[in-house]
Length: 126
Image (cartoon, rainbow, N blue to C red; front, side, top):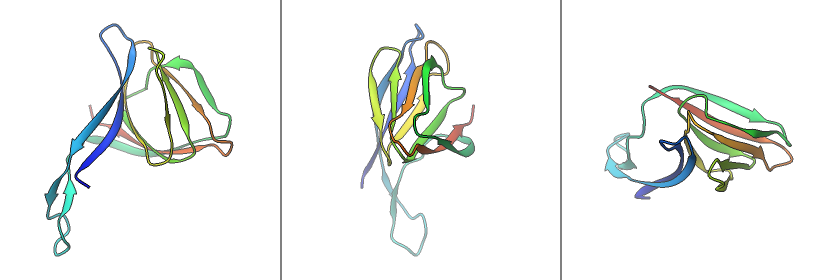
């Protein structure tokens, strides 16, 4: 694997939120010698990590901005996020969402899975 992909959710100058697909090139690094090199790319400085669980049927349908810049990695269940510009995307297990819409109109979220969802969240450093 020579690249990683994720989705960015951000607010523009007018406070409207939008999705953007991002690709990151990975380069070979001797990460754990004597094991073979792994393909790596630096990402973003972090402040905290946390688990976030939501029960089936949970909905954050009132639009809201993200409380801080953070990365959500969906581990279980499926989430649907709608940006304030009306674009809606689904995030199944294995997907990564960078939340940067910390001001403006925000986004809405709902859980599509009956059993709820589990996200591994990483709060980003300022």
